[in-house]
Image (cartoon, rainbow, N blue to C red):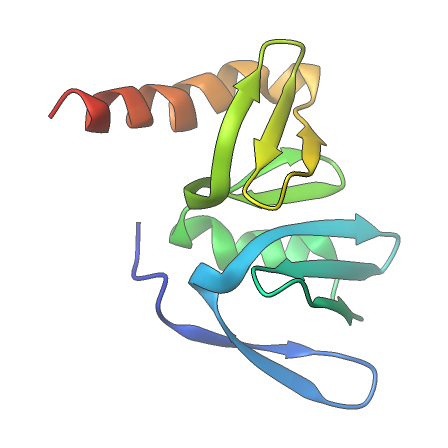
Length: 117
């Protein structure tokens, strides 16, 4: 996982928002737009697709848990066994059935590994 203190430029309707990767809680895709939820409560609506965010952010500790959701693994508070993740802002995000096993291998097992050291 790369340094989450790097900043990225998020293209919005009439500007670019520069945010630290660590400040992004999650991204939610809506057709060709993406809502980016930040720790300060701000939501940036970008004309960039969720797939583009996924390609950029997955190397920084993000996980594409559902076709319309990308989450920052460092912002996970709880995994609910019904297939949902509770994020640091209190929102719950679904983990698709097809990605549950990968989620467990890539996210939960890594966190267990860290907790045991």
